[in-house]
Amino acid sequence: MNLSIDLSTLSSSTRRISLIGWALADLAKEGVSRGEFEDFEVVVGLDFMGATLALVVADELGKTFSALRIVKEKEVSPVEGFSTIERKNILIVVDIVDHSKSHFMEELDSLKKMNTHIAGLVCIIEKGKRKEEKVKIKSLIRLYTN
Image 1 (cartoon, one colour):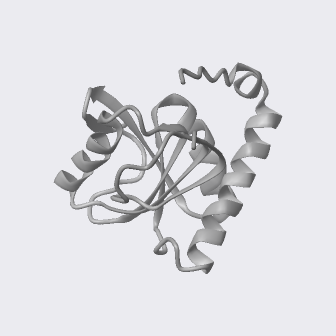
Image 2: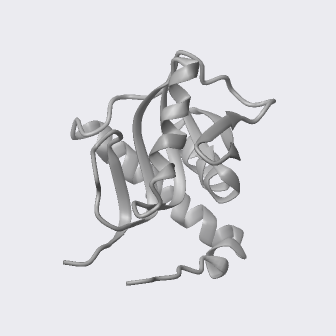
């Protein structure tokens, strides 16, 4: 099943982005309180939409903020000028996790070079079946086929 997701109605409104960011912050808070996530020091957004949402999440949770960009498939790099993530427990924020794209988890694995520990990941939509649980994920919406 091929499914396309268009988030343009979300990204075109700062109010809608803020509301979704608050929901993701609540999801992260719930993950820590239930022991599903470890506590974290830095909220990190991956790519443009993830960074936009992560800024709201960090503000809501009173945490520092950082951003990552995909420099090439299977590798991410910190964006200069934000909080350092080296030797920190971090929460990753993304818009969509698509398990059919195998390189996503490999991109997160590239963070090991920075001695960074991923305490958890929150996203708006999680698509597909989880292959392995390298990272604890909580999503607002989960799409999968039986």
